[in-house]
Length: 290
Image (cartoon, rainbow, N blue to C red; front, top):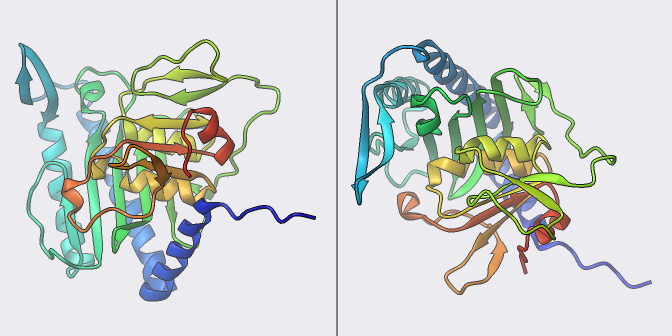
């Protein structure tokens, strides 16, 4: 009997094991618990701001179009998160979307924060957005906690995971899996459209973090992102891998390959990314991870 070739996506299990060995089980548990606290706190701040008037600015204007909005909520949430991390993990580094300060540049552990992912949705009152807390060790995502405005339970809550553990939602294990009766599943796609011949129907939520959580929870079969920032997906990658999913990155050579780690300069990373609940779904999306 011929031996089935080992999946190249199995490497992320080795990375998780190395991280848990280096940091220790108790430290990993503490990191995940803190990430959950931070994500839940961010969610509470977001909810409390809904329905009120907000101070909205746009980071760029191109050909008369206002792009990349940011509100006072984004900055306030990140400020609170940074203050808590300074108390609990004073040696760790932090990179966030809204504040440039790096308290421990070069440290092996970096907290990657997106206080409101899907800000355009948030400021317009469109209820699809997230707060993402990711943790990377030597560039490898090892923990994540994403507060999401909705979920598989039809309510807001926090999806979370750590290296060596499984996917949870509000500290309850999540058992994800497709319904075999559904013949055409949904995927996140940056263009929001797929050819009729595709085995999937496309959805565009406006929040990369939310789509990562939905893939991890099995609500989406897969998702593809054009050129996300590290804070958009660091926490989500940890969730997808903990749930048994796969992650592929589009390299500078034009080929897809299994995602290994972010570069040492986290803020510089911008690459096409694809995630899926299985290698088969990734292939059906047109992504060949080698």
